[in-house]
Image (cartoon, rainbow, N blue to C red):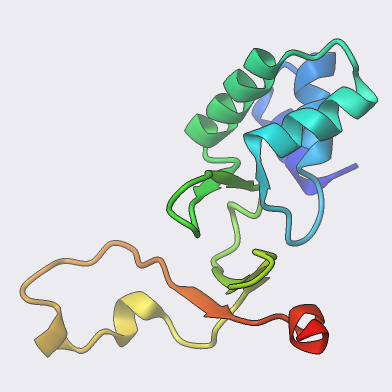
Length: 139
């Protein structure tokens, strides 16, 4: 059973067959699917699942704090089930693959006082960009 399914069960969230299949699609390491990708994968397992059900389920999971919405390209939102472990993202500029990374520093506390301009900082989103090994090898 996935970590996400465990968390949802522990919350007492009603797991219909549609909700379950969406949660199963989101299971795994480095999962960052768009809603359309979640729908395609869910429909492969449960053909009658509608796009609206997938979108509504993703919205509920985000509202519950069990899934994070990630936008690394300024366009499509992606859904990351790694919501309970602090991490940043590493993105390939060519193919768009996304990996979760865990830098050793804390971007909130590492910002020097002189650069805070009096702000009380609550969070920071850092996206690392580069070229993945597959794209570098293909070049």
